[in-house]
Structure formats: C-alpha cells, structure tokens
Image 1 (cartoon, rainbow, N blue to C red):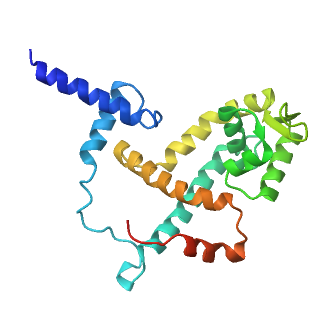
Image 2 (cartoon, rainbow, N blue to C red):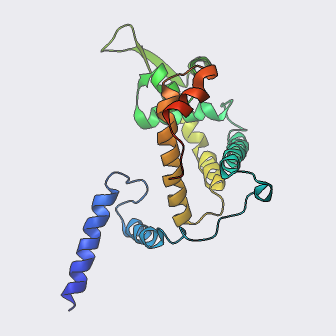
Image 3 (tube, one colour):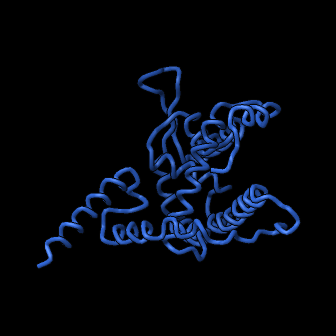
Length: 226
C-alpha cells in the first residue's frame, strides 16, 4: 500500500477544508466539491499568460474598462428579461419583489433599510417595493424588541407560499443567465464579481451625493492595474 500517497491525499483534504471553510457555497464538502476545488486549483494561473481577448472597438482604442462596463450593463438587461419571463404568471410585479422575499427568507427579519441596502437600491425605490409587498400581504411588519421606534419586516406565510410556487421558474432563469459557462468558469466569475462587489459596496453604503461621487472615488482610490 502506498502510504505516501494516502498521506498526500489527507494533506490535500486538509487544505481543501481549510481554504473552503469560508465559502461552502462555492465548494460543498462533498466529493464533487473536492473535485471542483482540485480542478480550479490546477487551472489557476494557466490563463495569466494567454493572449488578451478581443472586445468590440478594441482596434479603435476602446479601453478594457469601457468594455467591462458595457458588458455588465448588457448582462444585467439579459438577466432582467429572463426574470420577467419567470414571473409573468405570478403576483410579482418586478424581479426586485421576489429578490426581497428571497433575502427575507434566507436571512430572517430585518429593518427596512437593511433590506434595501442588501439589494443595492436607493431608499425611495426600496420603500415603494416594501410598501407594495406589505399591501399584497407577502411580508409583515412588527416592532423591534431592541428598539421600539424601529420596525422589522419578515416574509409572511403567504409570501413563502407565493415564492415557493414561483421558485422553479426563478431557478430556471438563473440557470439560463449563467449560459454555457463551465463549472470552473463559473467559479472564476464568482471570484471576480465578488472582488468587484467588495470594492463597490462600501462606497455605495456611504450615500455620497451623485455630484460628488466620481471625484470622491477618484481621489480616494488610485486606479492602477493589479
């Protein structure tokens, strides 16, 4: 019996457990998760020296930053069209309606502002969505035990029922959005998008006035190639 190989496998499993403890959704503690982790570890860095991809307008001097911004806008619009289809026969008016409910189901009761911030929306827009969900009986409001001046909201039994009824189509829509990406490509995309989200969210949370936003960010964050 090759005990060295067994020892190497155990060490590899220990590395897997340590590195993925903070991201169980990316790599579940199963043989499939372990195999995906190994595959991604093997592929990491292989693309670093590959040729740059083509993007529209590159030959005319269009910057990669411009291409990234445009592609993110396009992908958001594609995702909205699939979400619109997923709720076409439901009580939901917009994709934000079911996203609010999904967050309440996943994270439990919270204040209105916490929910609005979690969905990266301005207060006026978020309050309109919450008011609509309250009118429909999909969420319910209660006093906070910690602060009587504060109101908490949670998904109602009716909201759970309506959401569950539509979840199959919602899952189908989210599957379509990821298109023809391989598992490894999905994992890499999640890492990149998480990095962008972690950069932008603290800025968004500061509620910097629009007329000051770009200048403030440019002053505080020197943008250089990483």
